Image 1 (cartoon, chains in turn red, orange):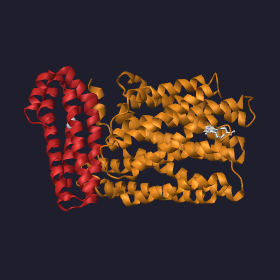
Image 2 (tube, each protein chain N blue to C red):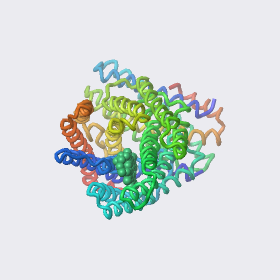
Image 3 (tube, chains in turn blue, purple):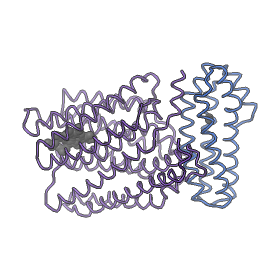
Image 4 (cartoon, each protein chain N blue to C red):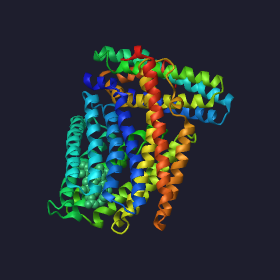
Length: 144
Length: 406
Ligand code: HEM
Ligand SMILES: [Fe+2]
Ligand SMILES: [Fe+2]
């Protein structure tokens, strides 16, 4: 399996997790929402870890591009992590508007982030790295 | 390899899109006032009114959006974007005002001056954007490839308009009807509808988490429509070209509705409804397009309703997102979330007002104009206030956190 296939699949899964959490929040089912949001958050952070701990370092080493796309991707992960924290707060306070608002920002941020990865970073990785062994290494961290 | 990656760093300054969007909405309000004024005087100058809308409202929005999307969506960097945007925006606004006023007053010198300023602005930026995109053609996805066909159509539409203006004032004997047909077809379907469709290929999936468009649509609709438009040079008024142009966008509108019903985010959202409404009016105008010799005004009005609804949906999503994104990128802690920029209640109110306005359009065939005119003004004014309010949130935060300035 290529890196592109493997990680793109994970993006789609995370989208679905979010859609479910969002639905529960908008219907005011707070207990269910917490559970679903936790899944979403954990899976998203796991996906980030696979990129930051496995893919990006290898990418930087093989291509010699250090200050390029991977740096931007890390920054966007940070922005996403901040939003996730704030969303968790909103969920604690059962503040629907706040949650949905932050969620909207997170979704657009992630969608454009994912698009850049899927269109540029992952294909470049498949070209320059050993895809099979990268996928194996990333799978060892867990399943999204 | 490096430069392509580095372009990801590039987020165009917020003031560019803010400037274009605000003046688009000012033009929309001016358009409403102008129609009301003409109504009071019992007249309607079609070309003057049409171009306040198409150049002032639509043109501003679409060029502003392209400044934003070229780097982000296509990885095509425009150097010194602030200076270029400032110039293009100023000239576009001034040129549009002069052209519309000139056409209304039937003053040749004003119209020609307006035309000249418009040509300088557009012949500068449109080829530049085309050049940037074509240089990257091999790496471009379907959406930015669609931009290329939209910009090419725009360019052809502008060239045709020069002959129209000269013909309009009797400077040149031209086949006026044929040119007019070509001009408005290139502008409405080649430029406007193709750009909207290409943007949709990119953002429908992204904003609403839907399945992607099939390749057959996203890759082939823009060049297919563009080829049909070129064919119109040979058969300007023929059903052979008009019917398939209408049919292409009709299918696009149906497919977009289908995708939206498949969206994974099921939360009720007026911005999704605006797309449904917009696609409905696009479908109507596609049916009317081959019949426009008899039904010209209904065709124009439904096309306008399509564009206005879709632009409303996109502005209300893009402005709050960009305000958050820019402030957050500047490292401002707890940057205002989207609802703090423009609250959904305000958006919902504008949405309902917009629906009432669109419903009132059904009175037009009975010769009842005033309700639509007043509702159009209310709709546009609320829209302007909401977007301006959102932009002010950005200005306020930026003032309060000068140390975070890049
Ligand atoms: C450089 C910019 C433009 C110039 C100088 C221009 C000029 C003209 C002129 C002279 C006419 C004929 C008016 C008449 O005798 O009835 C016309 C018609 C028309 N134009 Fe444009 N145009 C421009 C841009 C656009 C754009 C961007 C659009 C749409 C996106 C557009 C849409 C139309 C339509 C729908 C008509 C037919 C309605 C009418 O006759 O008033 N034009 N244009
Ligand atoms: Fe990532
Ligand atoms: Fe990713």
